[in-house]
Length: 145
Image 1 (cartoon, rainbow, N blue to C red):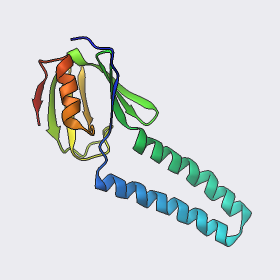
Image 2 (image 1 turned 180 degrees about the horizontal axis):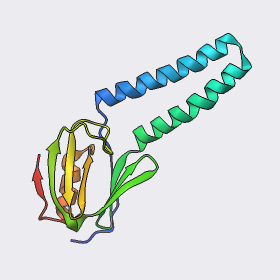
Image 3 (image 1 turned 90 degrees about the vertical axis):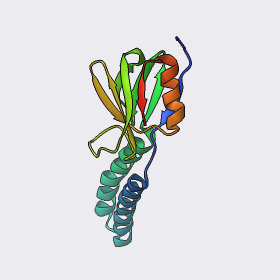
Image 4 (image 1 turned 90 degrees about the horizontal axis):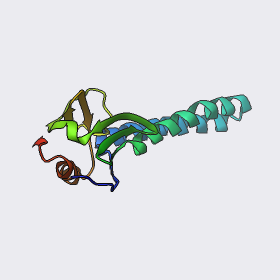
């Protein structure tokens, strides 16, 4: 079945990941605040120069990780970076995993997508809708969740 519709599924965000982001944001803003209170211009500039790009990068990754189904291709993005492009007709299985290995996923509750040429671990929000969209494009995908 061919489709030209584009569907986007953001990564699910677990409590652990939320806490990590909040702690990093707190540390960054606390460091900047401490520099402002100390009234040392060089300290303020150094803190801003270090923490603003770090926080911007972390937030971009956190809120920009997601999965797009477009023209029978699954596009996996980590923030502004494309991590993987998978032809949906090449997908064999999608099964549940709780692996802690590094992956383009903001949650521990993940799906391991195996396809011709490799695998990718993702954590789409609206998981059932995501799996149904994949199955519409490739009914032979074995789903084990």
